[in-house]
Length: 292
Image (cartoon, rainbow, N blue to C red; front, side, top):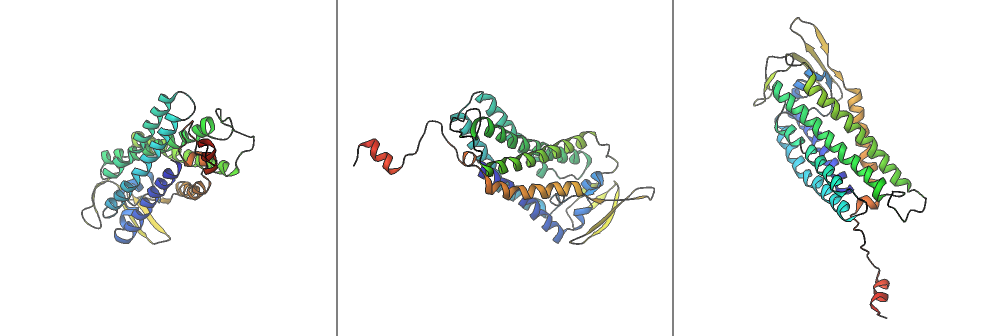
């Protein structure tokens, strides 16, 4: 289950990266002139997959990756059902809630932020999906320490020596989950409380560049290593759209965490282990059957 989840993580971030490259190559204005930069006033690497022609490609890649997340959920379900510990119904309920919340990213892809209401749906769905993703990772950490891992409440074989690679894995998952949780609450808070109706444009992306109606004007230019953009208000005042240092650093930390997690996944999370089942070696089989 953990391996499938890591592959899904790569699919998710890979889809965003591919979307950004497509937008940069074909529709560069959409990277800085969009309703996300109008309302958050920052340039974030995650912005770039909302417009044509990037949006259907990103949707396709995410669709390919979604079965990996579903497989991770199924594997965790089996570990709960056949593993150690109680309150299994509650644990499986939390697991399904995490999966449904994460699936909200499909809504984010289906509803680009091309009007104020669509902006609310888009940002809210993105925040909801991050919340589900963080919940799933958090559940995995709790399950590991309480039921699966070394020194867990039900671990009868623990010899008092912790696996250092498992410590690295759990630490990076905790950091990743915390980042996702923080992003989730920020997105949800902004989606339902930010007074941004007057800033948002109605956008038609049937042409390149897109056609904007109303909202705050954005002017700028994009180069591979530097993007300059300004918000121009009706009274003529200008406000720079800044590089999102905090947000992009969090994305960078998340990207670094992915290979670390892939290299340090504990076997108890990598595989589904059915309680009571044992795989015998050839010599053990021979002794059990009485063979020479």
